[in-house]
Length: 255
Ligand code: ARG
Image 1 (cartoon, rainbow, N blue to C red):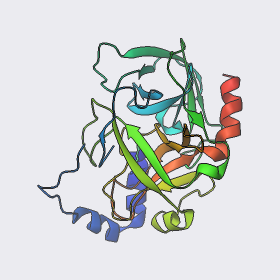
Image 2 (image 1 turned 30 degrees about the horizontal axis):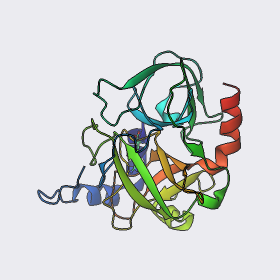
Image 3 (image 1 turned 30 degrees about the vertical axis):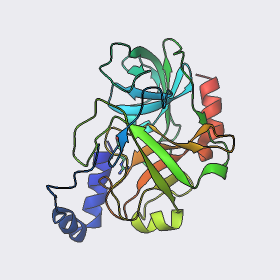
Image 4 (image 1 turned 135 degrees about the vertical axis):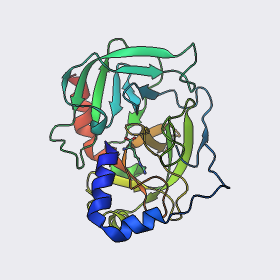
């Protein structure tokens, strides 16, 4: 889905950008370690991480509700078509917990720009730790952790094992210079100026998180989009969870 947006953006940016992209060298060396530039997460390290069957990530907002991206779902209503896999870094592990969805709530007003969040209610609760969401902007800076089973490089395959990486906050002003269409109030960016570390296709819907003042994980972002993956000066764009926290919490209570 982001691909469509990426394509739209690429086309809109015109021939200069297309030329720049096609000239990007593909080095035979220095292939990034298997998210892009990440390493494998340890079993149990991020117990709130969920893989969704449509090829997205998510996080346990409650034991029975997954927070993901609006662009990962097709609308709101009863929906038993999604399977959530949890409790494992290895998606092929025999100890994977798999639970079906019962309902989906796509962010009200979602139209493909901003508001990229959704909730999925599960048929049964999963007995694993949840990830709390930031309800103030206090943690919307610093260094963030991202994790997912998405591609380990632009255009690459989905991963069997959960990968993790850390990416620094990028200011709205800087991010807007990369992406003029950024919805600054609703989106938060992260990435290195030189690229090399990023989320990528298939990581969408998964959490971007950090430690709060008590040392607990707190979710500040939802993987949303980017131009390619891990390219220099093209950070990852994440739904700014603090902006939607009150809405997410009340929607979850009513789901
Ligand atoms: N929208 C993508 C997905 O569906 C995630 C892209 C994130 N891209 C990035 N460069 N951070 O999985």
